[in-house]
Length: 331
Image (tube, rainbow, N blue to C red; front, side):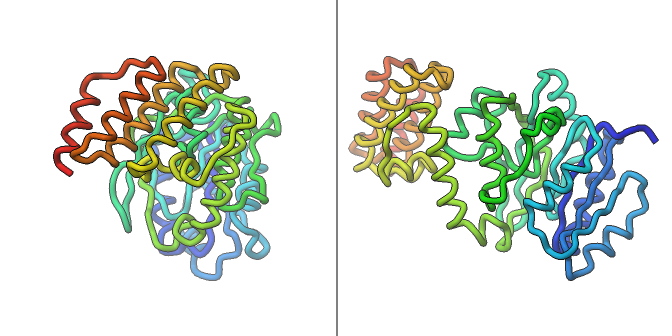
């Protein structure tokens, strides 16, 4: 058998109810030259039996001596991966049949290190998760949150060979976000702008069970990026909340957020850490979202938004004004 071009790293712990569908979705890929590395992390249910029920030469089953946790299991899978490319997958998600084909094509065309994709949510919630698709947009988005869904990621093994791609145990529950931030000045990003992964939303997911710790650690990671853009700049609780979620802002906070955006934009013009034009546009878009949510019939938010437009000397489509006005009239 030829060496696999792609290594799929799929960790599993007590996943007997879902791992069968996950494995089938990989084995049915339109691109077929891959190995599927399944690492059982000390499961106490029938996970191993489900894995062993599949008869396919591309499957490699590894078993941890007891439960080692996700990070150790992922790092073990990376060590044994043979492929020129590595794809992540989780035991409770489902890949579309063209996922590898689409991500391989984009990675080759752009000579890109890390490729993600949009997701189709299912389970406890539904909808399409849309994320930025080009390198500089993804870099900027890392200042605010994680724009790459971990099990959707597909990357070039040169990152492994350089010793750059590994998960740090101290960042448990946000290990992927920390890794992207660690790599953001050393690699290129892209994402396929359509759903290639069906992503399960459940009450037992890491986000649901360890959400508080994720919030705390994500704030620390955002601060790392913030200090690269604007060394010495400080934040308040309101700003931290806005950074994580622009739709959380209320009318009374718009002045403070506006001033902060102007300071952040000025700092970036000095540091040139992000593309200045694109960074300004993304800041405006995020503030527009805040104003849209906050807007009422008194149109304070409309005035606030165009005050920011004036201070940044920016140009915005006229429909922004109409959207704000209509939102105010309907509140």
